[in-house]
Amino acid sequence: MKNREPRLAVLLPARMRLGVNWMDISIRNVSPHGMMLHAIAPPRPGCYIEIRRATMTIIARAIWVKGNFFGIRTQEIIDPRGLADGRSFVAPETLAGWNGAERRTIARAGVEERYHHNRHRAMLAQYATFVGGVAAASVWLTMTIAPLLAHTSNAITLAMR
Image (cartoon, rainbow, N blue to C red):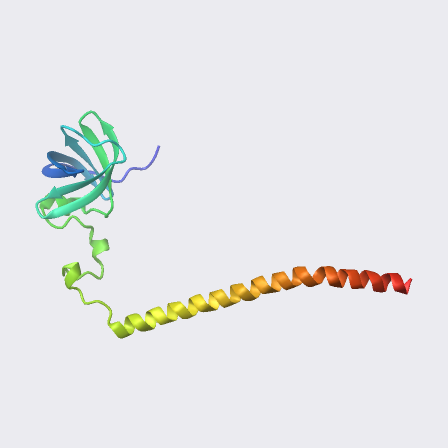
């Protein structure tokens, strides 16, 4: 039997978006990679859904459905206690290096840094293309010259007999 992740039993109200429709649901248990939910009209397995609880948004895929209960697998690793307490649902290990700033306000790499990075990538691509061309030319040359050398070698061998 497969080992299961530890689950935290909860009963939390939330909203679910399936396609363009929103509906009320309840979260019944939470694990680091998924949840068991209850809905009047659960999604089919394989459907992608959006779960909202307070200011938290979770994107997930429905994995199984049994009656009005269904299980989802989330894209992010979830902190079950954080979700239940109303704090951030994202597990602390996924927040490493994040200072809490909105993604769009985080400073991006400067133009000069991107230029050098892209120039380095272009040089690598040119080198790979050159090496590939040399290898292809070597194979073609070998395939062209080998029969000539074989013919010449056979003629020399016959002349020596």
